Image 1 (cartoon, rainbow, N blue to C red):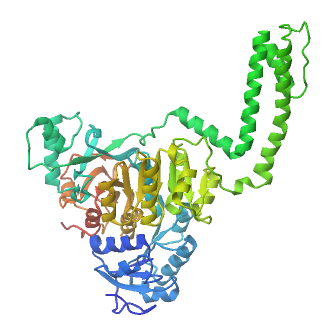
Image 2: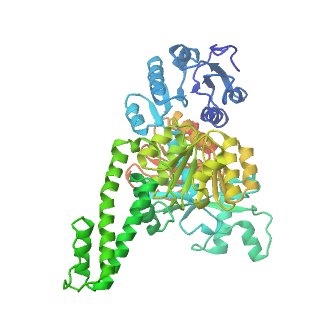
Length: 602
């Protein structure tokens, strides 16, 4: 049921419900997650019912009410009956606004579960101490690794204990696999993918795989296996296969060390100097090196040549003296010494100009453009919350990155400036911005602005210049993304809200999601669940947890050995006891099933 009029409360009294505050894409996905997978009553508080995702939220079946208030005030909280709610999520607005609203909600209902979205994770960790039953999450931090890893064609990973979990496909699947997480993978029809199918089908697929390849062999897709054996098996799902594997360390970035070193050196040089100063410095340095080589050739004495060159470079010219060690080099030696002396005189004012430019002119306060030597980099289009996180992650991995933003007030510009990352700030034609970002020499383009059309435009403009460039898009609409996959090659699509909403929903239910893994447009959740009173896990065994599909138990931590993760725990009949915990890979509906299972029930 939907409320009528501005600022009106829900039409019917409601209690034991969940409140979502926001009208953006994350609020939309979170409300959908709660009503579809957790089947709980939801009230949504939006700032404007005619803008952003609010109209689509109103059309969601299962949403009890949509209430409009321009900000989350005391009156707004009373209107959505926060005093009788079980949980509330603040997923819109600035960090300061969300903190104030969270403390107000806690004042009305001390027992309410609070989840707030915060970009500043350090501040969020401190705010959690002020909340009796609250969690601060960052949607951009949850989603950014998937975008960065997709740009590098690198599997995203989630750390559990001392291991990293990642998804491998077809021939890349090795003997360290934990479980098959998806089959029927077809890029032309992503709707056919089965994510964590029922346990019987999964076990059957492992039997077939083991019988064909053995314990140490790779896994191929069902279609490839049938073609190789020329024995069709219509009962086996057609398409590719994905499996979850463990690594002892995070998947490495495939960039040669010498390329990273070259980029770091050039990046440092570009930070301190402008293009003209670099030309002067490089020209003078080249002249000094040539003159040094000439002196060495004429005199044949390295020590004397170095001594003379340093004196000339410092301005204390050492004239050519007949009878000096190594003999005289004649006219050419004098020319070389003059060149070195004048170049040395040039270095002093250039060094002064660099100091003035960096310190006095406030060069650090302005983003810099990419230099002519920028190569093998990733272009990030849109420096909002997600773009800022993607830039930071790529920079931390040692990957050259260039930002592109049309709004000079965007959050990510100052963050990129602090990292020394070049940024193209321009509201002109996108094709010209991409040219200035050195697209022709880039390795990938990541379009993560808040608008699907802008991101698609960036992809098409990039492909017009570089048909083979890797493209990663942020798209909200699933059908739109499916068409993009079917039309473009070497492309990946991710949805920030789709990746983050399951973690926010689980947090509202008191569950901890360790991370998310993307299987194309689908999301696999990695969570650790503790068997506590009221959790519904005590007395249940591995078979009970996996029986309904959508869940795989990856590891078990027993109460008597809490630091030891027992991967692929063999005893499927042992019931969980208080203090035990399990690490699971789950779909959104699978995790919701575990969260809503009554204690001791099946």
